[in-house]
Image 1: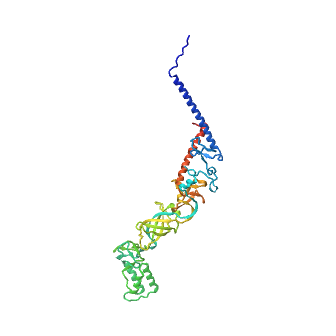
Image 2 (image 1 turned 30 degrees about the vertical axis):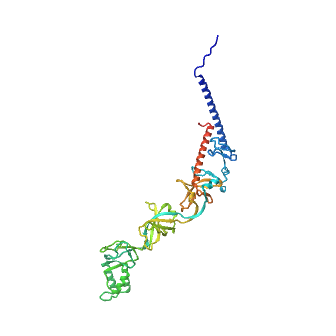
Image 3 (image 1 turned 90 degrees about the vertical axis):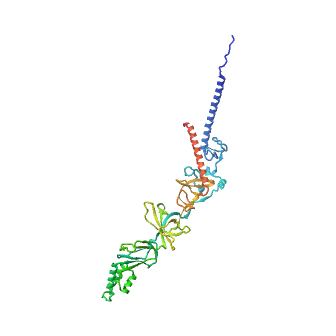
Length: 449
């Protein structure tokens, strides 16, 4: 009996080949997983190795270090030698411990001497220096209150003649300003003449000298000029008019009467000021109050006279602060012999605040990040460490350091933006390496894949 073999079903060969391919793929995946696991253990062992044995590191994954040259098992990049200054945390300048800095988002960087020279890095030492801050403020011109004179009369009457035609007119001391008709004054002069026995009819009264002196003083208290009293003694006739002279040489700032007005002792007639010296009242912000002292030098400029600067000193600091503007007033006293400065003029005041020795750095060394300021501390071997600092108001070239640096520290004075970019990149790379290391540690300890 002959045995017949049935042919294999259709597709059996394809299924056998597919099984072998699937088996080979699973085998490759298993080998890759085992290799990755071994490499992660090796990377962790490299991280945990002591700094004495670690001589090389990956530029992209600083968490991986090795004691021999080669390639990074994570990214296959060539390992770079670890500078001795980076491996030794006590290699900082002056024996101070090196660190990554205290500025969020930045890290210490190591730059070769060739590259430092290429990008033009300059350094400067933190030292004490006497500087003064410059305050750009605004102010306006006002008359010197010490030169103001108000013309008044102490009796009632009518303005018969006014010699001042307009406000702003310049007058000389002793120049007649106005003539006032006053019956009250006429009566007082008559009483004085009676007391001294000098009436127009030639009669002589037997009065004591003391009464005459009292009458003369009464006229002075009423505002009668000495010239009018001398005329009374000389002519012996009372007058119904009195002429008021200018008490000082200056400019008429106010004219409150016209011819024919009735005036009394409470009526301000004219206001005269000597404008050969004027005040400038400057608005100072409350936060800058502590920087200004008496006798600080100041300059004042107005748009009307752009080619000229008026020099002066801080003469007075007013004791009150405006609740509306949160400012207080400074007073400058300026010489104004030709009257170029007019009351009411608005201008710019530059106050050079008093100098005092403080810790300073060049203004270029300070990097302003908005919420905070920082500088790069220069360490030995081309290492630069970001350091948070607090600064005060400088004079344009130098900035006082209030906190964060010590006298004798060395900071980067130029090309800070290049080092800042390098520091940010290094911090980002370091952060990526730590994230990868944390993930590998989680897998090793049974963490969630």
